[in-house]
Length: 422
Ligand code: AMP
Image 1 (cartoon, protein in one colour):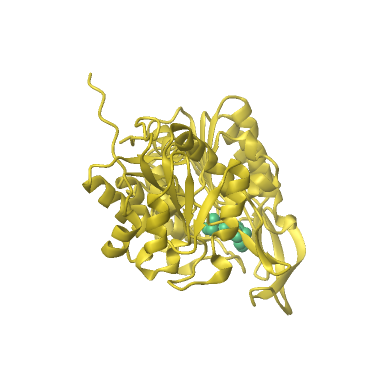
Image 2 (tube, rainbow, N blue to C red; image 1 turned 135 degrees about the vertical axis):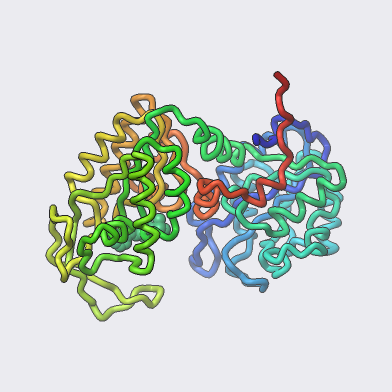
C-alpha cells in the first residue's frame, strides 16, 4: 500500500517531527569530531527544503552509532548540526538532549521555516525500548510526523514508531519524506510487477542472511545469479568441495531447499562456474579492530567446481562474470544485493566490478536497476558507477527485511494513501 508523502499534505506553519538518518561516519581529527562523509546529510535536503519552503517548523531527530543509552561524546550530533547548517544555508539550532525543558522551550519557540536538531536519541535507552513515556516526551508539541530514515524503519523504536503513533492519535498526519518515498517506490512498487526479464543478483557472506530474500524472489525473478561466499554453501549443498572458503556448514539444508525450490519453479539459479582462489596465510598481525590480518598467496583462477583443499574462493572468476553479464544484458529489471567476493581487497574485486559494469551498461540500455543497499552500494561507488544505476537504497538491514516482504514498523506507522476509486 502506497504511503502518504509530504507532497500530499501541506504542513505550512506546523511543528513537524522529522526522523532523519544522520548515522554518518565521524572521526576525531585534531581533537574534534569531524563528519567524514556528508552523503546522508545531503540526502535529506530535498525533504527539508520542501518543508522549509512551506513554512513548517522542523524538529529533526536521529541516532548516531551505538551509545547504548549513555551520553557518549564521540557520538554527539553537534558536528552534524554544523554541517547541516552549511548545506541548508541557514541556522540550525541544536540542543544537547532530545527531551526535557530546553528541548520543549526551543521547539515551542521555533518560527516558520526554522530548524532544530535534537541530540542523539540513542543517548536514552528508552529510544530502542520504544518506551511510551519517552516517545511522549519526544512527541511533545509535534503536530505532524515525517519519516525520511528508511535505514532505521525496520526497528520499532520511539523515534521511528512510538512518536508516529502518538501524533496519529492526536489526528496529526504521519508522512513519508521524499527519500523514504523513493525507497518504497523502488524496493516495493517497482518490484511488485517488474518489467521482464527480472534478473536478481545476490552475493555477500552468508546464505542465512539472504535465504528469506531468495525464497521470496524465487517466486518473482526470471533468473537468479549467485556470487560471494554464499555461493560456497550452495556448492557444499551440491556435494562439491569448498576447501577453506567461507561456508556455513550448518546451513547446507537451507541451501539444498533453495536449490530444490529453484528447480521446481524452473527458475534459472546460476552458481559461479569459476572462482578466484588463494591460500590464506596468517600474518601474526592484528588490524585496528584487533582481528588477525590474513594474507593471500598463490592467487589464481580455478575453473574446477571443487576448491583445492588448501585454498579459499574469494571472488567469482572471469567466465562467471561473462555468463552473469550476458544474463544482466537481457534484463529489463535488475535487483542487486551483496558483493561477488572479498571486494574490499582489490585483488578480489574484479568480479564485483565486472557485475557493476554490466548493471550500469544494462541501465544505459533502458533497464531499471535497483541496488539493495549495504556493500553493493559501496562497491558501485568505489567503481564510480553509483550515478549509472536507477536507484541505490540507503538501507542495509532495512532493505533486506523489506525485500523479504516483511512489514517494517517505521513504514507501517505512516498513513496509507487513500485507494483510488475505479
Ligand atoms: P554481506 O554483508 O552478507 O552482504 O557480506 C558482505 C561481505 O562479504 C563483504 O565484506 C565481502 O568482503 C564478504 N565476502 C563476499 N564474498 C566473500 C568470499 N568469497 N570470501 C570471503 N568474504 C567474502
